[in-house]
Image (tube, rainbow, N blue to C red; front, side, top):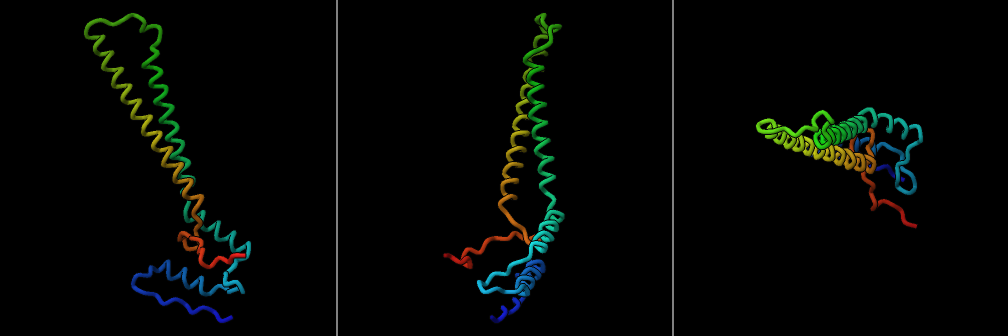
Length: 153
């Protein structure tokens, strides 16, 4: 079997992509046209990819911040809606208006915290799903399965 020629770099070809194409062209070709790697090479690629793209840890942190915001909102609402027994006497006049305005502002703040926390959790979940479905090669580029080269039984 004759080896594939190395790709010609063009203006549109980035250095990372050119290195990737050169690496693919240099791989040994098997009878089915694939370029298989050994387990050791795959392990090196996985380790390198984790060091190059350490985002899962960052998104776990965003998850934790979102959860903390939701918990803060819950406890804020609990304090506003269930005041302590010392506040059992109903305020009158200006104190009543101040209490009403304070509770409305606290509720709006709680709503903002909850919406922000839920948004962060949704973003982190979508990002985690996307990262789990995407594989990266040794150059940090996303690797897509080339279905046209897949052999069918």
